[in-house]
Image (cartoon, rainbow, N blue to C red; front, side):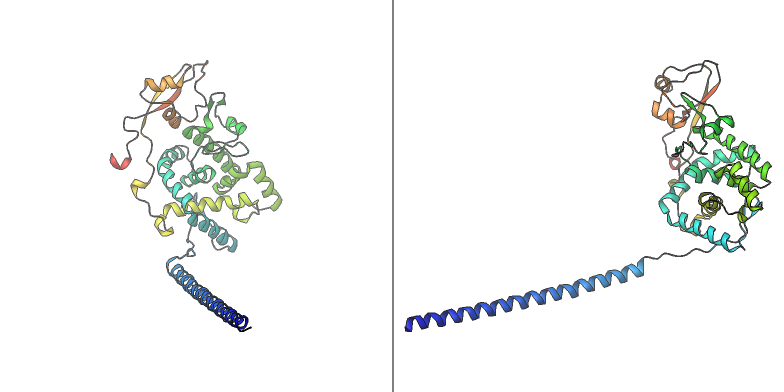
Length: 325
């Protein structure tokens, strides 16, 4: 009996110790969790303070007295200011895209500017190519192609050769002249380069339909579809940003920009069975030949009529960065 009582007392003491230990463990874990929670909260608060002090996003000052293609932008109108503000913000804070536009413009604008001057088209209209294609030979889902985004039939209408193995929508110089022909025709029709620019996006017939319906003859007074309604504003915004880069936070060194290609030209007036072989004859390769002549659309050139084509070929220093020349 005494032994049984002694065992019961020992077990009772053991249970009390076990329960006490459990309470101690729970208390310890609770303190640790609370400590972690407070510590983690302090870390988050510090992180937020650092973010607030370090990361700043600013609204932009709207420019004043803007001119586009010789025509005044009516910034006294509320919706004009707000639409321009939108495009300035989008193209300022979409930094990767706008930096690439800066880089490419340095390569291609000199080529386009010379042709616009020869064709008596305002220099500002070079920015149409910038927003049409980003100065790359893209193809839209609808099939519009090249820097100036000509559709196949429209390209042919304005003198571009488009056939098997040849597509001059990819030819920067020739497609720029075709774009000039279109823009001059639109200017003659509307009496305004701004409306001519808008028609480049939606077509002359589409724009004329809206002019007739709304009884106004000014781009800034027309209610147009979303794309064309933004089109000219985006053109103006990119002109403003590229001409005042540092004001919009862009700091590019000369060596950061893409320099114009260094090349020489040769004329051919016969078919070429193998462009790869031709390239090797001139100490280059097919890839570089196509880079300089993207209008060549196959590995051969059929030329039964004996037409004279001008091919660009790389200079010996073609691959040397401009900053090292």
